[in-house]
Amino acid sequence: MARDRPKLARTLTTPEGVTLNLRLASAGARAGAFILDCLLLMGILIGATLLAGAFHMRLGTQMGGIIQIIWLLGAFALRNFFFILGEAGARSATLGKRVVGLRVVARDGGRLTGGAIVARNLMREIEVFLPLMFTAYSAAEGVASKWTAVLGLLWAGIFLFFPLFNRDRLRAGDLIAGTWVIETERRRIGADLLAAEPAAAAPPAFDRAALDAYGEYELHRLEEVLRRDDADAITTVAATIRAKIGHAAAGTGSAGDDRAFLNAYYRALRQHLERRMLMGTRKADKFAG
Amino acid sequence: MADKLAFSAARFRAEREGDWVELEALLDRVEKKGPKRLSEAELIALPRLYRATLSSLSIARETSLDASLVAYLEGLSTRAYFILYAWREAWGRKLAGFFAAGWPRAVRGMAGEIVLAFALFVAAGIAGYALVTSDPAWFAGIVDDGMANGRDMQATPQFLRESLYGAQDVSGLEVFATQLFTHNSQVSILAFALGFAFGVPTMLLIAANGALGGAFFAVYVPHGLGWGLLGWLSIHGTTEIFAIVIAGGAGLHIGRAVAFPGERSRLAAGAEAGRRAALAMIGVVVMLLVAGLLEGFARQIVRTDAGRYAIAATMLALWLAYFTLAGRGRHGTR
Image (cartoon, rainbow over all chains, first blue to last red):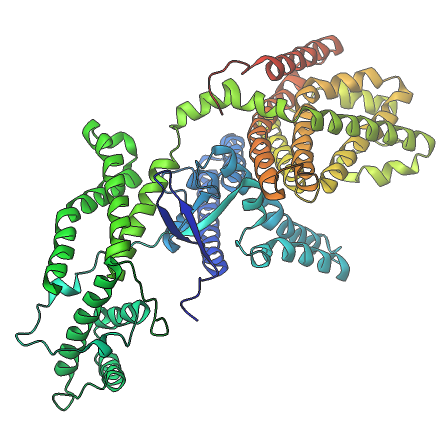
């Protein structure tokens, strides 16, 4: 059921004693971010190589050595420090992670130290680059027998799919560095549905039984429907609720009518549940007492 | 009664929404431009706004069933938490702390593994030497042709002498040094990363490098060039091999923590070892940069044994003194 604790939900208790709910990044999101970073990396590398080639053509051979050195050092730095520099910033995320909406945090919720960032990124050497180089090298040398290819793939497979084999979606680098990757969803503050639409002049009255039909879970789903404001959904939901609470449809079920009904019911149900909440009794869903 | 409730919910939000919006704006600026751009008043306001938002979240969770409001507060509080508590130092301070204390402390923290890696390296060197001396056919098995570059068991003494003391084409030196540096760094990072598999591949990598050195000695020693080769190797080797041994030790450190975590959980032990080893690895890259310069330039310019030994001994003494003595004070916790 959707109400069960999702598999990727984690909690973090701040020093102030408030528990915050975190959501770990899914393997798909991680892979997406990594592919974005790789594309960017390759783009930079290809661009720099073309630039170096152009300089070489223009300046001739006496500058060749310097260009070669800059290229070598640049490629080295890019391969080893591109990810580290990205994650050392205030957002603790490489560009790919930022686009996807992820950030790296320490598993214990404390400071993300430089050592941790370096550790988790140097491990990428055996996770990605080594099997890649191995495959490329053996293919180029023509020594790629069936078995070396299989072994290389197996190696790459173990580390590449490592995040899928543990419940915290840790890759080998995360394991060594004591980090994990969480989602950073930016939410806008929505309008208060109670304040936004003042009660109709004569609000339809709902009796006690009608208000006890649903719990918080259903209230939140209703809130989603109202915020999305999709005509079909509103019609369906209104019909369902009417049937459940035995509320006779006032009109013939026009869209505006349904919306008004749902608004009124949402207002009544929320105030009913919030009042119970203040008294210390919560009703999680329609099955609860 | 119902309307009063709605009123208080609306008032709760109206009273506090200003704080939330202000906090959000401050966080945006910290993420985009860094904390230095904030004024003093804003820096003081940041933790206050964070706590206010956190308390709003607590209240909203217990009194409001507005899911979107609670989710918004939750997201904002989480974001603020990671900016405030996962705080990191400025780059300059971080670097200074690393060289003053972090690096030598990390190296000292895994002294046992480094000694073990060194012993393995020496043992593999002796084994490589013994194997090639007893049966020259081993040489081809240990050293590949490209690396040997003609310096094999059939090489003439003149050729070998020339390879140690001969003048090289000076124009390509800087590129050569850079290639050495990037190649060695990549191998060291590999040795570190392989430690994850309980350190076994790391040991193999160290042993392979040791055997390589031993095999070369087996080529040079019969021609009376053993000391010459040692000088040729150690002018940069005291730095380079030291660095590779540290990298191997870092790998073993992780491997040991994962295999034998002691009283902590395997994850916790691995994480602590990994962070320490990673600090040492940054140092290894720095050492290899120095080694690359020594190998690329100093070795080609200084072509007497005495000069090479002097530089080698000085570098070794410097590194040992740095790793044993630096960062013993209380300051700089990490």
